[in-house]
Image (cartoon, rainbow, N blue to C red):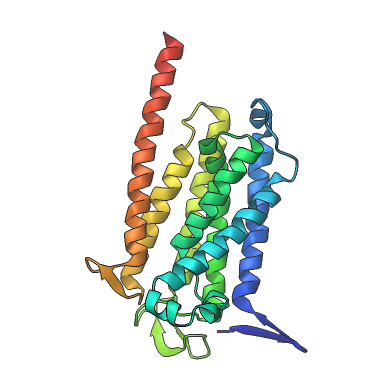
Length: 269
């Protein structure tokens, strides 16, 4: 793999390059979602959005998410972190998906309030773009060979990372590539649901609920072939976080759909 690109005197980490690409592309996806929903959004009392709000949201939530991903990763090994915290905090490698989700989620709550969009509707809008950004970011993990690959395999598409940041000469599952395709598929599903929302009434928060469920299931299953250490009941930290995501998503989905049905009954009465 190619952990770094050398352009004359410049050394560019491919992981950082792909993270920047992920933010850029996801901003375009989010802006497209805002644009197609704009007639509905402009009916919201006090709506404070502008024509480029998608780029603002990704800029803020993306940076906060990266900080959360880094912090969560280093705190997974607290003894190592507190022994020498500063180099670990500012390393270019090692980011945890769930930490990024938590950081980005907190930022999105703030931004929803700032734009005066109902939180669940705002999270619905952001869900497809979040999937696209994650998918592209995983290509950065693949290019840098940062240890996010899976266990050894004899399958024909197995890959080795002899020049990776965390090198291996064994052929292993290219799990970042699996996640790239899976998360793009989830993004496509959520995008189509957003299109359906424009045609017919639908519970606010339903898209975000499915985002939590589908991404949680995908990450939980991927972890079975990853090389992450096991902690809780034989599960990795990411699997534990994934189960929390699935449970939260399922609970939220039941709640928003029941509220939506109640509102329809009240309107019909």
